[in-house]
Image 1 (spheres, rainbow, N blue to C red):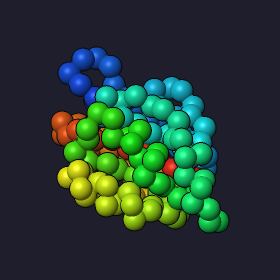
Image 2 (image 1 turned 135 degrees about the vertical axis):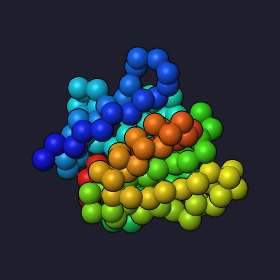
Image 3 (image 1 turned 180 degrees about the vertical axis):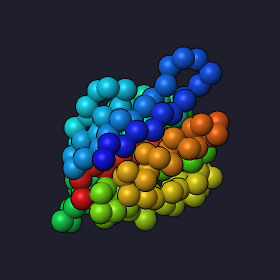
Length: 136
């Protein structure tokens, strides 16, 4: 079943709309995005710079503090992290500490639920950013 959620980013006619998501991809505004991405407060969709966290090793590339800065560019009040379809993206403790120190609320959900939550918060006028991990 397709996932559809319209996200109004501002009062203008531009909107971010999720049409679907699957393992390793999602579609927003009719464009297919492969792999993980960050959605900024202003609705910009940019690739997640996972290479910055490779140094931490492990069986899975954890979300590290160096790459989290890309999501914080526009000073969100809330960061929603889509932790994959199974919800297993590891988030380093340094990330949680950084967000807490800046007063940013962290919400972690499975990726499909994170898209819906981002939409809900954006519609409510919150300054929200998201990181979408699209695999496991």
